[in-house]
Image 1 (cartoon, one colour):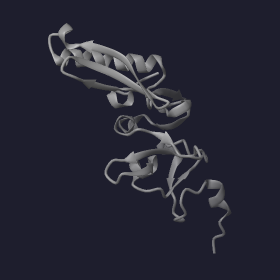
Image 2 (image 1 turned 45 degrees about the vertical axis):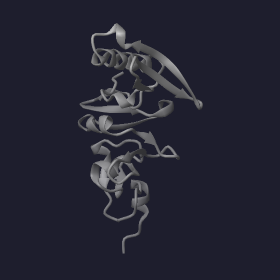
Image 3 (image 1 turned 30 degrees about the horizontal axis):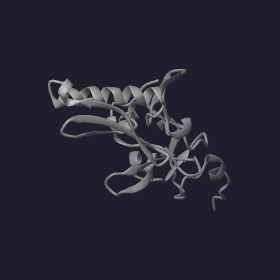
Length: 174
């Protein structure tokens, strides 16, 4: 398993007071302290923050609270990534698209059909295809809407949103 470098992908928050650095975690509406670091025990605030950050990462991994961990899959001659969302659900992307893992927090749509993230510019939920390709007008060749590898994506020339190959083949051409 591989883990993102973005500290925001790890559970909990790190806050600081005049005397300490605190890691907190909120679950089921309750906030509890994971660990505290007294600043008097460190040479600098930066040293305490660095240790708290490393602990937060390790604690999140041990407790399975890391957003968008991923694994590299090797299949025949191709390599791609299996990206995990909540409850160990997942979607696939090309290995070249790894930057999208770091730059967005990925979840699945309510119906578990699409990888979704908040677009930071528009503040709207968008699918992986909208963020990567700039639109939703695509076809998943193998009909798996969670398979976002380039080899599985085709531009939809019929202008119907997200139709499958099967549906496309039943469209009468006049």
